[in-house]
Image (cartoon, rainbow, N blue to C red; front, side):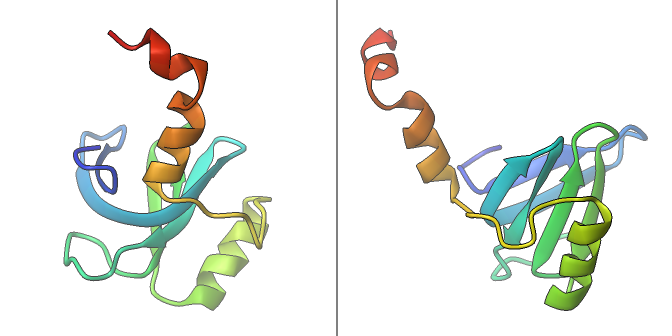
Length: 101
């Protein structure tokens, strides 16, 4: 991650993917959600599923194809997506903030 929403993903074959993430969820060994389609990188589509166990990245141009894959991977079909800042504040808010050097 370089700026909160632009991410580099390396798979087990050392292939590097550049992915611009808009909103996502982390669930059951997967990161999945919406890409930020204002950037053109080495993938197609507005949706992605990243399997954290084997580092495989799946991208989808159509929402219907994405939702079919969510069902195949037993993932939530209508999850509560969040952006990077929401996850960051959720983790670092409160007492953790005071422990930062």
